[in-house]
Image (cartoon, rainbow, N blue to C red; front, side):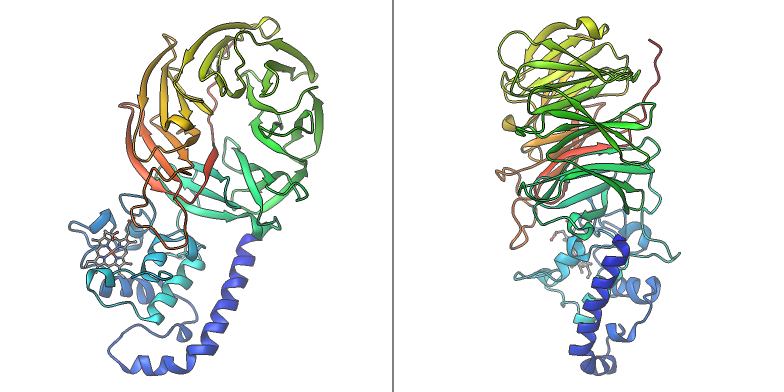
Length: 485
Ligand code: HEC
């Protein structure tokens, strides 16, 4: 469906283009320029039409020896790996692609003429745009990353888009525009969850306008929308570890409805689980699949759901008001940390017996924490602290704060995700205050959100990818380790 709509809009573009400039393209062919006019090319062949442009215009600086910005353009497999800073192109989305925005910017000096080189011709720019919009097909006839398994889905809370990153290549490989699926320009993805085998993914989609359609949407691996359950203010999503259901909470500030949802993944039919209070947000399931934990930001009470019968019971949280944003449960299922957005602390709970939860210590994290993630080996917990522009790392054996990670790219950090091998933690940053400066600002674009890659062996930032504004919560394929109780 997506591919169909995008191709159609491309053809409209191509037809207008030919109608207005086609008459001149013959003249261009008489010159030295070896590039055919865009109107003369029916099927783009990578080597003939695209690589030849790169060879003539770019490879002097983006070749095998000391490529500028780490970007090689001397072959398709290099191009799709991107630069030291992320992807050069987003297949199917020329207008989201850095390379295209650089060679044909709106209202500023483009590349490589910024370096005293000749500007690409309109035909060359047109061919490159069309090639990206048609899927950046390589010499073997396939689009890049068509079969990637380790994908990270990033919700943007200031635009109706979702970015998809290949966590092995560490580049954006697709961008999903919610308006292409019939959602309004006010639609915003809140959270995403991905099947362990990567076959399907689910997004909770809200809106800045309450009258808009909202709900939980199911997409397949090719990003075709194949199911939905409409519901107001859908929040976080958690997949059941071994049954055909998922659970959905509500957005942080939602006053209604006062319920969680259980949705059957195969057909997206839902059951409502009443919770008595509003703003039920945090959401985590024990790895055994027996109990679910949620809580309200309004009332400091934990909601515990017995997943065998959907019976709900409550645990009163003690001490100062916490307002938990999210929970993370250890792989052994016995301990759970929560982010106290109002208490500026993270709190540990012993949940080995869900009928008698024990509240343990709270650790001050020097700001209002939001999301958190365990490493698969349970050694550390990473906590995002947006208003302190940092990631706090907990030592999950000693239950102490181990260190803070600060970096220019960590600006308003929100969502966290761990690569399935535990080697990297990914941090999505809103950067709404602009404390991270775009390495090359494009006119009309706000501060770029970032995706920061942390190497968990050293807890240092190894990459900052500029990723579109308002990068927020994320979801990735999680390979759930199996533990016996
Ligand atoms: C004269 C040398 C030179 C030529 C020719 C050149 N580039 Fe570059 N390119 C650079 C330098 C230097 C940078 C890094 C600084 C910058 O981003 O402006 C760069 C950066 C880039 C980036 C941004 C990488 C990133 O992630 O920031 C892209 C994309 C790019 N070039 C594409 C091209 C394309 C496409 C061509 C041919 C049409 C080309 N360049 C020709 C020197 C060159």
